[in-house]
Length: 274
Image (cartoon, rainbow, N blue to C red):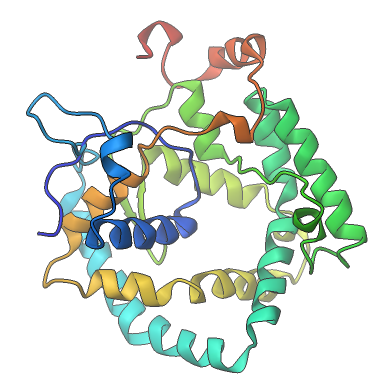
């Protein structure tokens, strides 16, 4: 076991696809004995600096999905991604990544608004306008070169801020670690993607997704192969990474009245929120 029990605070919420990046960076941090963990983690009641893992009532099912994911990752994705990264130059792959982020702008706009993050909504709108025009349809991230702030907002994050706290760890087919909040958020994120409503766009959407996965397969494969049964290690690492405190400066100040209004339809009554 690489990691013992973990306890810490909340983090910003990302889609399950990008959780591989969080995993790889956290594993690197742990293996290189970096010190920021002691600055961000809270000491638990048993004296541990690390948080408990997200509850795993679905462990038998999750382990089955984990085994399938491991086989696909190591047997198919890792070798094919090596070929992809060799054949497709890095600048071209980055342009595909930039295009993917640009075209998913509507989802970020909606979620910034649902969370009362008006500054974030404005920044993302300006980024979309800049990259769509000057950046040739989003193929180039001109907005970042012009120092227009970038921020992340998705439905998993929105659900969490409305009061839906994770109750179950979930291993998603092909996508990896998640929890019940983010899994439903991911489904809503996919529904908000414009490409889903363009006939015949499935091959394009699949290609964009593959490009994102191909950038992270090596780190993910090393994590899967780090020990005979890395399931628990991945669960603990993922739980820790997802509980860091979000930096709301990225999104601008909250509008409390907006969140209170939206809180009426959250999964957990406001009076029960911690």
